[in-house]
Image (cartoon, rainbow, N blue to C red; front, side):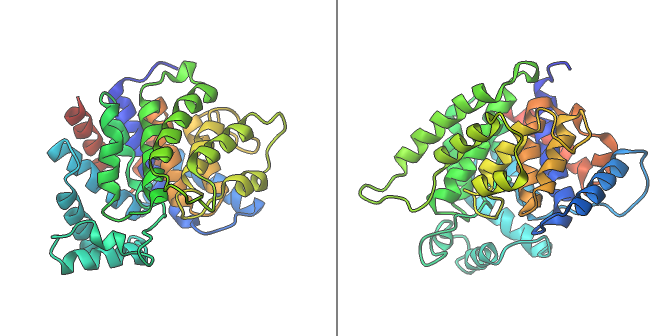
Length: 345
């Protein structure tokens, strides 16, 4: 396996996110039985095999909003919050049946009502003023990790600007930073010398520093933070015994909250760099995709985030060409990845 060039890594991450979204969507919210997993395996094998004409696998709000982020970065070489918010609202208005959650639709309604004069206010009003701690900001943020490959000092600033349009809770924002930072590290790594210990040893201190900054003096958080979840990821990966899916899900979760999905996606990505019992593939991308979906839960978003990481590490050469062809708008996303790369350098 050769070290992929930078353009290949950009394409791998963008297209990996699209494939994970499109292939994960039909299984969202499910608990997959052994029979379901066998059907999933046959379906992925068929999609990877000789190309056949079939209706394209549709992308969800994950990819729709990711596309808006990419376009904003290409046009402005920055996150222009008003332009990005406008793009989100226009995308939803044009195609509202992409799986948008009710909370974000309410944010869009308020942005239209105030004519984009207050970009962050509607998000701050969510959930009795606490803000959303869902994974909606994290699911669309991988392009920022790519864009900042040579300017990592800008990453947190750009992620926060992109997140605050819909998420004001620290867990929602920090989850987005975690996903972007993970992509940013992957872009810079050689897959031939990649080890999860080294990866986590870079990522954990970044989150420790970030979470220390967002602590409220005198108030102790009621649940785990991302640093603790990443340490749990390391514990699971270092386990000498085979891990059951229940052990993984009990430790990390797989729901729509950022704290119980972003670390899960990172674990899946790291676990899939080696063989996984029951997944008969030597391709790390295929292992990532199948394993992410097989765990159930918020499959489209978790698979999208995990596959974006694998794509950022290995490049687009590992994404089966015929599988990609079955995904809606794949040609457009290839062009966007190319333009994002050009804008970034």
